[in-house]
Image (cartoon, rainbow, N blue to C red):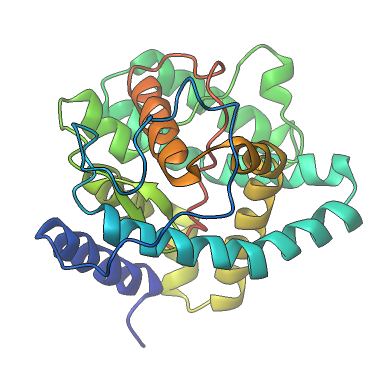
Length: 275
């Protein structure tokens, strides 16, 4: 039996993070172009792409911008069209059901991190949601727990490390995964997968078709929920890269504090569950 996909991806992600952490030389910065301005001016840094870093924690900006451009190409030619087709042909109630099922499948990851953060109340809330939605909610199709006043929350191992004082380090843009940092790259894309029993079982039993179906649907469904907001930010930002960098950091800080992030524009966690 071959190497499980979970392990293969972790072996890929970890060295990549280590390599850039050691200061892997990146190509020259790509000039930002084709983006306008507004909406995020309150949150986006005021520096231009060519200005030196003044405390923004992005020493690998030239390399990050190259990867950012690659991600934008992927979005434009693959993810964007797939999301448009998904939104046109899948009715909203069905999309909601799909999102609910995917969220329910992620519950073991949330529960593990609730426990590791020392939050028994949150862990009990997560357990209740999983039990109710997996039964009364027909496998998570309907979010019955929310209708009963048990609201959802999300956690990952990057947040867990942040709760226990691990700093974010410097800013990274990962291929496909997007905005990140060493702490979150390891936490979300290396560790969290080991808390996902379904994903581990699918990998270990060589059910690659099911793995990639979950991966593809999850990525498209996640992006479909935020595409309009991101397109608006893209159109109204002087520097879309800098805007996302600022927003990502604010979002992660709010998540680590377990504070409400509703006042921040949405930044999708589009990790395509490749971990």
